[in-house]
Image (cartoon, rainbow, N blue to C red):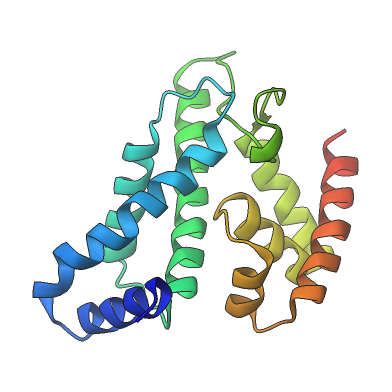
Length: 181
């Protein structure tokens, strides 16, 4: 069984109440979730560590009784929850001290070394505006930026082709660049 199938089977068993699979499931997903979190912080000065982000996001998913259908769906939901945790953290930091530095994330992990980062609240608000114009493109960007999913995984989660994902990414990135400039 490949890793994706194993994770999907473990997630389904765990959701069905088999608590004994939790250690094996954790072994498969924890590092991937931390990698997703780390990708957003490269090149930025963020107080919230990837480990804390993962723990908060997963705890909130479990508290909310979030349901998932597959490995890709789980990671997509985790990406959305990480976005929520980052935005909440950024808002608390901004409210706690006037003029505080914004929580920054990198939008392109491939260029993290030269990327100064973008304010997570700014990205969140821009994605909200994009969603009003093109909801699918906003979801594609969200899953890519916050979830670190590749085009195939995004297509799987959203039920669209890889070519459609790539078109939405191209449009969404251009829209986001324009909106945030």
